[in-house]
Amino acid sequence: MKDSITVLQEWIDKHERIVFFGGAGVSTESGIPDFRSVDGLYHQQYAYPPEIILSHSFFVAQPDVFFDFYRDKMLALDAKPNAAHLKLAEMEAAGKLTAVVTQNIDGLHQAAGSKTVYELHGSVHRNTCLKCGKKFDARYMLETTGIPCCDACGGKIKPDVVLYEEGLDQETVDGAVRAISSADMMIVGGTSLVVYPAAGLLRYFRGDRLVLINKGATGMDSSADLLISEPIGEVFGKIRV
Image (cartoon, rainbow, N blue to C red; front, top):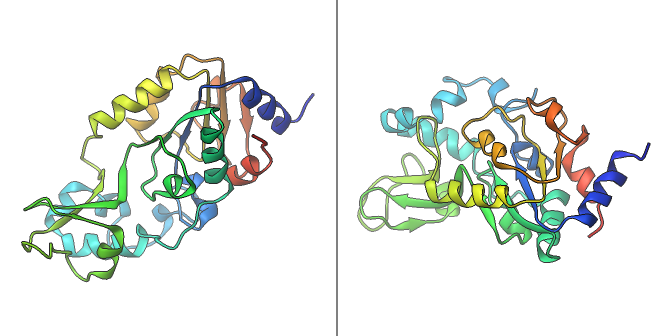
């Protein structure tokens, strides 16, 4: 039997409307911690559980604590794209990949050169004053202390990140659904597929091949045409475009 990388390579060569759906595991090889692995944020000790801190109600009630955590754990501005990000951008430039659908908020896909990226959970690189609407970049947020305030009107700034208790941006969801539903091959990587509604978007896939690349088991393993349980950067580093 051919090894999994050889099979993946053959399928990529044959398909021209590939969509990649990724989660936190895509960025761990860039030094950004995920949430649910042994070393993930959910297994670290804080005064409040991370899923509570990263909720809309907590942001409203205790913004000072929220932003202390946010700056410390969510703003990894020195992280660089890894082999997975770079290969996906190369696949798009070669006309093989039509879109990246990501649950990540780090902007590394764009930093690698990807153009069509649907960020389901927003981005740390977009921040908006809740009072006047002025926009700020991630560096501004990192270099503030306490509750970041607008330098124009003094209003509180909110990251364009989808918090718990908040809904996904409908325009982003619609774009992701269009891409997934028209894909002839889908590669899912670095996600345990337990975060909904994002993970539910995979039901729109009607293409030929579904590939899952993840170090741990997912709820869709039985539906995959190919399972690869290796670090995603290492896998994509072996792919030719």
